[in-house]
Length: 173
Image 1 (cartoon, rainbow, N blue to C red):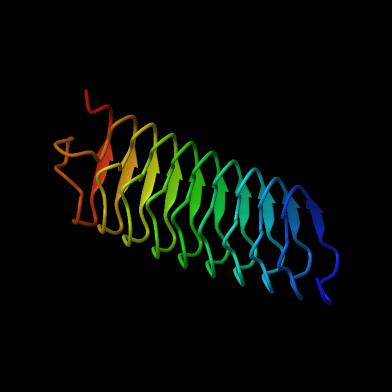
Image 2 (cartoon, rainbow, N blue to C red):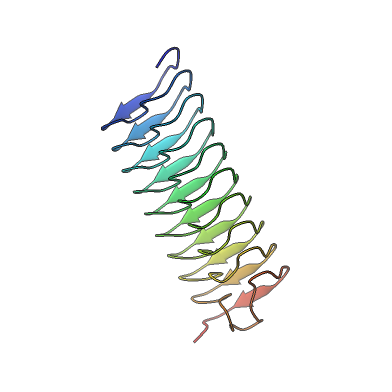
């Protein structure tokens, strides 16, 4: 740390490379390890926000949450491996184990439920609520899935893998 202020770091290599980033909270082994100038981030859990360098205003709670995020801003990831592959995507919310875990560069997606929107990589403005909801969407945008297993291959409303502007309700089964 050179001139960063108001930072809190607890754990092995927590905030290890911070230079000027300020107002960061890092609790857990390797959390916010690569952060240099990112500010107002919260990383709680082993490897939470590990690769973050300049990303700001992110919240990662859970082991590997926002694990390889580098420059993405204003993301919220709660749960083990939530948004774990995000690099530059911003404005995403993932709550649940592995929620939005394949997202790389997509913005403004909301996933609530374990493994919801788990396959999405670049699709934007999707909302999925429920276990496995929207789990087949990869690049589709503007979809809404509500209920367990909605938005998976063959679910009511058809596959949403690359399509957009669809709404799915109910249980796949």
